[in-house]
Amino acid sequence: MVELSQLWLPILLSGVAVFFISFCMWMVLPHHKSDWKGLPDEDGMMKFLRESGARGGVQYTFPHCSDAAQMKDPAWLEKYNRGPKGYLVMKADGPINMGASMTTSFVFNVITALLVAYVATMALPVGADGRLVFRFTWTVSFLANSFGLVWGSIWFGRTWSSTFKEMFDGLIYSLATAGLFVFFWPEA
Image (spheres, rainbow, N blue to C red):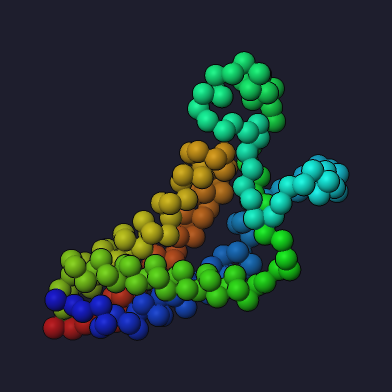
């Protein structure tokens, strides 16, 4: 049986690899450039949001519905059908803190690799065939890196193209993770 402590190196290296691959995916490659669009009247919308009292660190829906019964109200239905409808996430107030975001991202990558390793230790023995280690760790990593994104398109109107592009990124992260686990898997 493989002990989790035997996998500390691929866990840490996976965190580092995914961090740098993610940087390249978002900052160097062009496939995410079309994921976000500016508003037609950005200045007017920003002025409206400031004056309306909308706060940072809050998720808003419009038209807002506080419970399922309200969805049957003809006035609410008319607002919904007339549109626009959507979701607005307001970032928390304060300066951009790239250092904190990058650190949190790295910690998340390491935790993901830790969970991949944990599941792998329950299923794969010491000296397991590299193809089996690859298939297993790739699958768990891909599930962790990609499938949680689908809910955003199903329930919150996120474009499927953005979701599929991020799932593709997750595929690449998972290939790197699986490769590192194969390379560092304990020998019999």
